[in-house]
Image 1 (cartoon, rainbow, N blue to C red):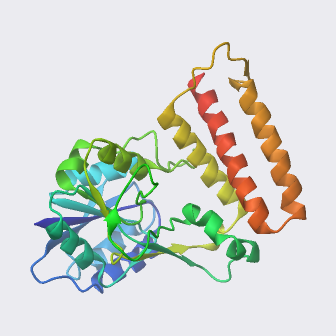
Image 2: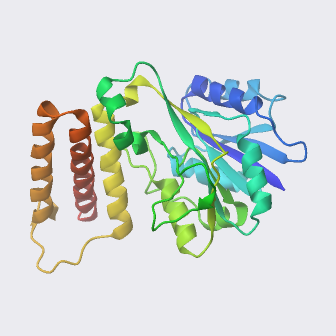
Image 3: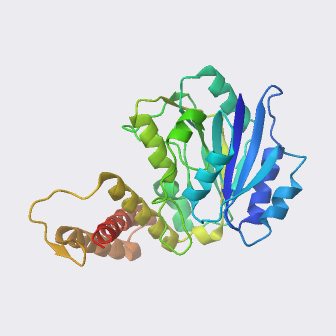
Length: 311
């Protein structure tokens, strides 16, 4: 069994160095054959120097994808790697010493399973704002937080038990049959739309394959100060709303009336939610306006989807 650890990176050389150092410190089973594939997504910094510094410390190789975009880089990794399983993580993550071993044990225990996911613990650059610390359980998804408990359980679309991008694994045959959709993912110069891995995992599970939650496969997701802002959260959850609208498609309401490319009822709902958020933003504790911010952001993302469809 060959396991590919895949990382896509764009101009985060020093963050990548920290991630690779955590991989080098892992306790890898002696009988496990593995490789690290790092996709340089047309970086302009010293990413290649960092990768070269770990040759000899890791079974690492560099691949290059000229077309920027997370999904393009992921698909390049799939084309380049030979793994029987793909274990995906990010260039701003610290992996636990037993991370890869926990996945390898699960692959052997459940050979018929197609998807696996592990715990993601946000690690904030200190000090996080008080409003964020008080409302982290509301905003956790924006920082990749993922924790479905200490016991193994089945992944499930219906119950919302879906692993996310910084820590999940896919069996090779399914990963090659379910590539990443470039309509999702982060691209320079465009709005923040995530969900590329969620789309793939959902399609795999909806096709009838089975997935497992592996709580021992742990990573820390390093969150810099630039992401500890309301502006970032708005962008993130607007992207979530757009992603969800993309998956479900336009509604079939008869005699739909449109304003500026989106249904009139959706504009009205967005304005109402925006006003409610702004009123509570200054009058209420963060745990109150956090939910309102998320609702407003996701509705605004739905409007963006409608407008993009009507061109």
